[in-house]
Image 1 (tube, one colour):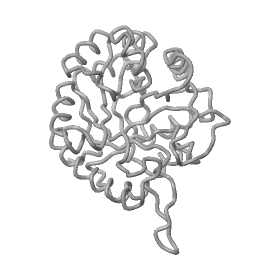
Image 2: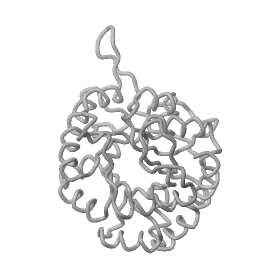
Image 3: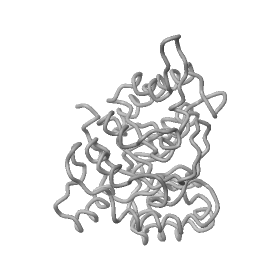
Image 4: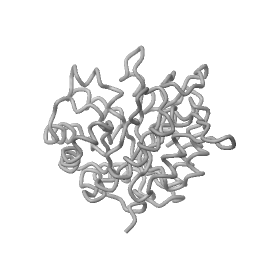
Length: 298
């Protein structure tokens, strides 16, 4: 069976979905591309790294009270999979995905897979590429990353974990590879990876910062994106390819989220996570504003 169409549903994932379906019984969780479905509200815990360090259980409870039902992990905060599972269960949250660096995936993939399966997540996502200069990998480095992602994805598939890659804006910088042709990190990873082993998590904010339209990307590459990072960008944000972004609470920036979510449904996206970038202000306030806005469009 192709992993493009297969869904890995843990019991905790089913319960999170069921909570949404109670409110919207006509929708179907895990529907195919183009079918109407309700997204389960999710949040990337990178957004609340500091609050989690100060009050781990309390922060999770606050996210659940806002209406979030799913989370994506990045910093494990020194806790075991069992610790995370208990804390998330207590808060009424389900872990769906975990971000890891290339170095972790290269050195400790077995441990990462064990942790993921113990927690019951569906995805492991590579958070960023390896590069000598993080601001802009070379085209050869992009090719190395694409080949590496294929290898990791194949191993993840044997452990019934879907493997993905998360973009920033550097993926969209045009490298001249011949007098007549340019290539990007995005194009290299998209064409060199096997869709059965490597899916994508489209970060909408970083794509916009690079001058791309997330809705157009979703429709052009149907069934290649399983996850979204729902991130908005300020109206005065600067277009660039150098890991600079001016993010704002979802609904307060430049993105047309109704169009994005419609494209997401039509293209086969399964889950989204709101993500904030570090900055001024209380991230819990911004996440509450984002959650309230998303209730009207997602």
